[in-house]
Structures are given as C-alpha cells and as structure tokens.
Image (cartoon, rainbow, N blue to C red; front, side):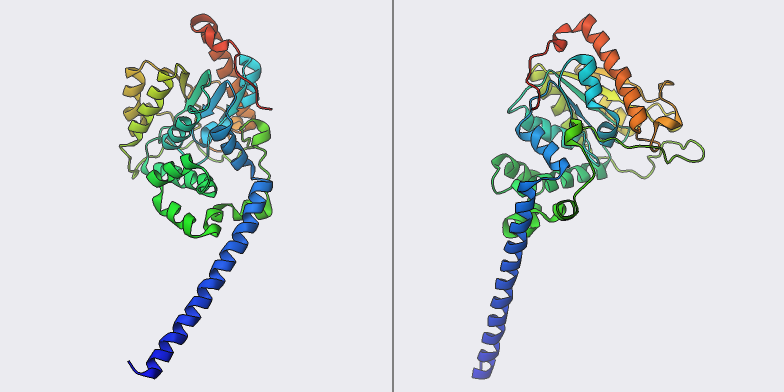
Amino acid sequence: MTREEINHVARFLKKLSILAALLFVFDRGIGLFLQYLYEKDPPPDIKAFNHVMNTPLEDVYIFGSSKAAHGYVSNVFADTLGLTCFNAGREQTNILYADVVMSEMLRKHSPKLVILDITAKETVAHNMEASKLILANLMIPHITTDTSFLRIGKELFPKEVFAARVSMLQRYNSQVLPLLLGTKKNRFEENGYLPIHGTKIEGEIPAFQDKGESYDTTAKDYFEHFVTMLQAKNVKLVIIQSPYYVQKFTTSPSLAALMPIIKKYNVEYLDYSFDPEFFRKDYFYDNVHLNDKGAHAFSARLASDLKKDFEKNDPAVLNKSQTARQ
C-alpha cells in the first residue's frame, strides 16, 4: 500500500470516528432528555403497566385485548363486588401479553379474582406478534435496570433488547410522540378502563371475518399456562366472551382451540357474545368494541351476575382482604 493510500485510509477512519462520536453524543443527549421526560411524567399507558407489573394491590384484575380495555368499567366492578379493581386489558394484544404480565404480577401479589376476556381471534398469529411488540415497547425503557424485564426480553424480543443496550435513544423510540405531545388518555385515573364514546357503525350488520388468518399453535400453551398458574395460587378465574355487533357465529378456530382447556380445568366461562340485552347499535363504537354507554351496561350486568354466583357458590371471593391503590 502506498503512502497516499495509507493517508487516504487514515483520513477515512478519522472521519468515521468523528461521525461515530457525533452519533454517540446525539444518541445519549436525546436519550437522556427522553429519559428525563419519561421518569418525570410517564404516559398513562406506562403508568398503568408499571403499576400492574411492579405495585399490584387490587383484589380484581381484568385482562384481555382492546375488548377488555374498552369494555370493562373498573369502578362498576369495584362498587358492585365491594372489591378494588384494575383493568389491565391492553389494545392489540392477546393471551401472550396476559400470560407474561400475570406471571410477573403473581411474584408480588395474588388477587382474589381475575377476569379474562377472550376473543374469537385470540390465537391469530399477528396478534401474537403484536403482543410481543407491545411488551417490547413497554419494557425496553427499563431493560437495563429491571432484571425481570431483561429476562422476558431476551426470550421474546432479543433483537430489540440488543438495540436498546447499544442505543439509549432506541429505549424510548416508541414513546417519543407520547412524551413530547402528551396524551388525552386518562387510563390510570380510570383504574385502567379506557372509555370510547359514540358510534361509527353504518350500514348492515357484517359477518364475522376470519378468512385468510393464520393461527399460532403456541397460543393455547400460553392460555393453559395462564389457567394453571392461577389455579396453583388459588386465584379465582372467570373467562368471558364479551358482546359483539356482528352476525351471529358459534365458534372459530381460536375458540375451538381454547374451549377444551377451559373444560379440562373446569374454569368458569360466561358467554355474552350475542346476549340480546347488548345487541344494540348504540352500545357499540364499532362492531367489536363497546362504547362507554355499552361498557357501563355490560359491566353492570356482568358484575351483578358474578356477585350472585359468588354469594351462592363461592362467597370467599367477596371477602375483601387486599389493599386499595392509593
């Protein structure tokens, strides 16, 4: 190699080093700013997640997808059952998310009652992937300080864990807009419940659509683990299908996969999918999600049904013994 070529390589390496240093400074500078915002005033979704994972105190927890988050009014259950309640449902998730979060919760706290809302698409493959992404977004900011989150991350989203270790900015990548712009969601103050208002339903009632969906066979394993770990802790579990506003169907590949597990472990299962009391357009925001009006009506009915059942068959569930969230 000639002296000129050596000088050329040296200049290139120098420029590369300067660029790397600038990128490092930029990453740390913006990352530290986002960390400051995150720790000073976390978005409501983060507050709710951190509460469930780190400081769970309530007697009753509600789990499930967006149907759970928007359809179960925590305060209605608390008032009816006389027990503290928190809605831990999460949009764009399925049983994988519920199983991971519940596994960590039980290390710190055993509630008296868990309500799990399952959907007719519970085991769809893209719901499994979405659950991993949601968990990654919520856990990555803590990946360097929380050994439990690190353990979960290495198992479910190792690439994201590696990126977060290299880049501080990457840890808060999914939180940039909520941190800078804020959010109108009032989730934590509503004990986890996420109300949606009005309706956007138009035209005829559609048929349930699951054509072209692929299904993840591991979902039923997560479901069975969710059931058995609660039973091992003597936590009462009730599994619910909440109302739909679509043409009536009786089953789906997901339900067909999960129902044998429900029967095997003799889990209480209540199906309100097409209960005529709730099959009303004004109760739904869209064909799957109850609006605030419908959620209050459904929650009142379900809470009442549960109270009657517990008073008759399992009165110990209604004995308040936990500490309310301050």
